[in-house]
Image (cartoon, rainbow, N blue to C red; front, side, top):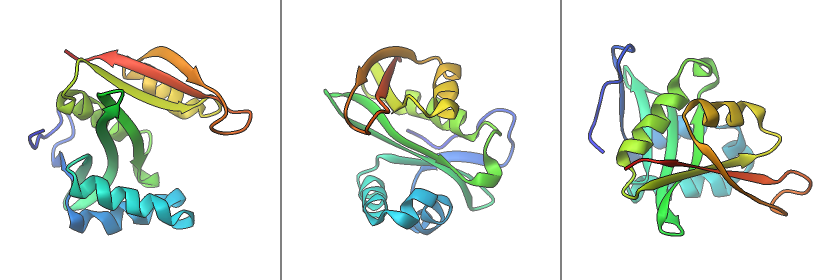
Length: 150
């Protein structure tokens, strides 16, 4: 994916994450502070070119992980937005960037059934239901969604 400036948000840029972005990403990711494995996964994704960030004035506003190892399809495994930037379109713009960067005809994403905010975002981004995985989290199935991107 090439660097881009999204439409109505002048000064904001979505680009591939760089190693120097990781401390900021971990700084606003509450889950990462309690789960060190998340930090390792983020470092690995950045090294492999599988992480995108939205930045403004050198500040990271949000990030997204995109791989192509979900049954050889594109898969967004994580979208995290800084708390003071939530509900301002950052996650939606990152998902649009993932669609552009996806190398396959379909892009998948998932969330827990209980995560109403993520489900609303996924629907707003135009993803369609694709299936359910039971038993990842007790009594909270993982809902899988997809979107044709080619």
